[in-house]
Length: 148
Image 1 (spheres, rainbow, N blue to C red):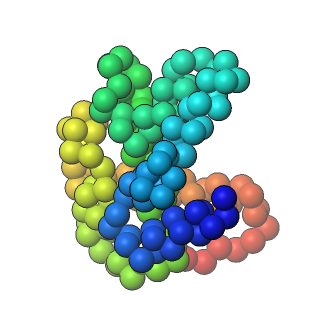
Image 2 (image 1 turned 90 degrees about the horizontal axis):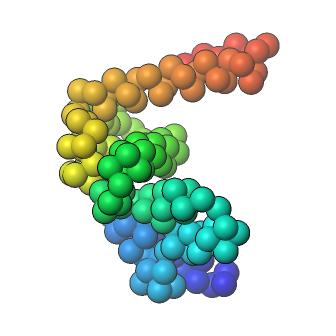
């Protein structure tokens, strides 16, 4: 379905404020999460893994409190990693506090409340991610001098 994938990507670029899942639903009638969950179910993977993927972008609707918390953490990690990729390409945001606010705005309010996410601890999280990324790069490229 290359034409539909192209349509989804074009829509995502033209309307960056529209959720990718909404675009997928509009164009395909389903999301990649729903399709992936069906495949994992067919492969008879554990229900927890299937639910985690199926509700990755809506963990607040999972009934099991433990799984809900794990999914909320996975949701935040997914959002932050996706936004970090975008920032690498086109950020221009120099103020970490402003960046933290923008990231936080992408996270469902119920997830923010469950994980006690604030601008301050999101700012700290982003700083720690940056440090960890530099450490990992140092391991991958030990003989390279990284200047940032």
